Image 1 (tube, one colour):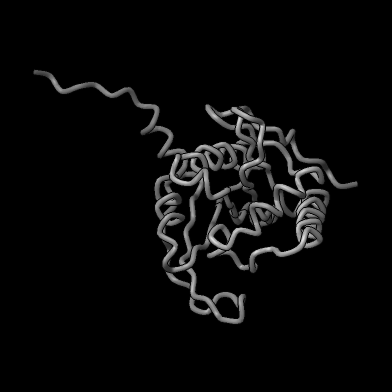
Image 2 (image 1 turned 135 degrees about the vertical axis):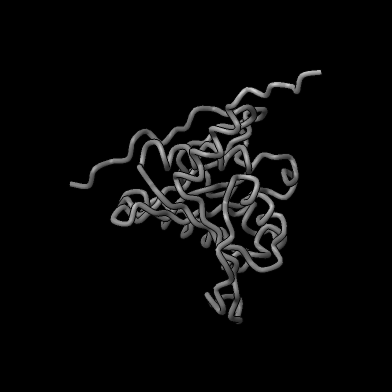
Length: 198
């Protein structure tokens, strides 16, 4: 029998609640993933039919059941609305994971995804005992690059023609965050700042 994950509902952050994705979220997934701007750098074309969203959700729930992945719904506490998702593809043998995320366009540039990913990363290191988490971005996805760097991810290089989607091969930038990187970052973040003597 497959061992279940530790509880997937994450402690609420300042503005968000992260909970496991659910079939009931299908309509919101369709609304978010059908926006061409949200899907601009995704390896999928914007969704055009609700049946595609149903398949996406079914696949993500299957991954969780098989312990090969987790996807959280990002819920705004202010109105209990799903505004995006984030998640991990997991390799327990290697103690590594790949990070993915997207956010409804009206919620961009407010620090919300950084808040969500901080909670997801804490779960991955503290509960799943991951050592390495990586993420890829398109070469010109400046927003995701800035977000990953703000979380402590280190750029490791460009993987040439790494994937094929939307009828073209794509180079991607590879970022990774090791557990020791994260611990060092948290230590600095939690160190009280002492102002210089006058």
